Image (tube, rainbow, N blue to C red):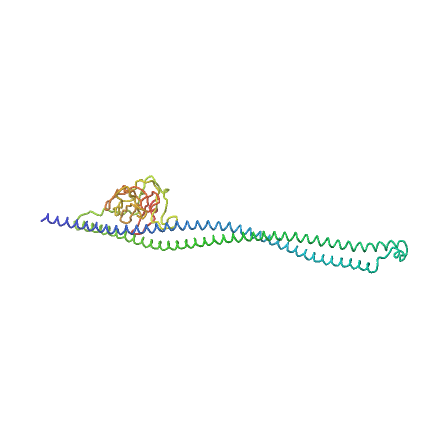
Length: 411
């Protein structure tokens, strides 16, 4: 009879253990799926951030080139302004000499008419003879005076015509030289305007590229906003899954306590509250090795723990006594976990009031689910498995389901 009862008890316990293990597998699988999905989203966010950075760098490059073009355009515009002033001055000179040339032409015409009229009068009236001038003179002095005046008039008329003609030719030559200068200035102005237009077109093309890059950047940022929202939602679900695991452990503790009470035993749960007293999980590597802090990465994305940069194979120790509730390892050394595997190989220890997590471990399995560990026990070795860019330990502390700053527990 006693043997039969023992068999029933053993059978019931076996079934209970199988159900518990099955439940633990289902929960673990669900948690792993969510963590992997969260890692995929984070990976996509990081890729988008890299594209945003690359896009911004490319846009900055074009903006720098636009700045150079602006300086060249400004230089050409300034030179064009100066050139236009010179063109205006040349046009004023041309206008002035055109007026002078017109006046000279009028003077020449008037002088020529006067000289022609005087010659015609001499021709018609006859050239006064020296005898005529002599008889008309009052004395020898008056004679020479009249002779000089008469000859002077003719010489003046003749020289006046010659001077005006020379002036007209001189002004005409100057006007031609200035017109040549104007043609040269017009050609230079045309060339500079052509260069300025080419610079403006190049600037416009680069500005269009910048606008396109900024639009791409805005789209990526919009996508990241949606992904961040999704990541926050998944993190909440992960917290809920962890809460379920912790609730299962608490329920187990209560059942053990109740069973011990019914059996009259004074035994209690092996899990003792840590009361927030933790040891640093690495020996020989201190806080100066922290590469990313809680609660944000340097780029502003969420980070639920601290990253401690150490070489691959560095021993990792339990920060406090507790029960291993997650122990994920790959079975072969040829695979260290893909980028989308989140924490990669990791261990999670339940301490009653807190839970600690040790991520990106080496594939070498050290502890198993359900195993009781003491503070300072070896639980794994560091690596760079999962969503990791280099060898380090990701150390996390959660109170209930909420991640808290691990550094508050260390002086």
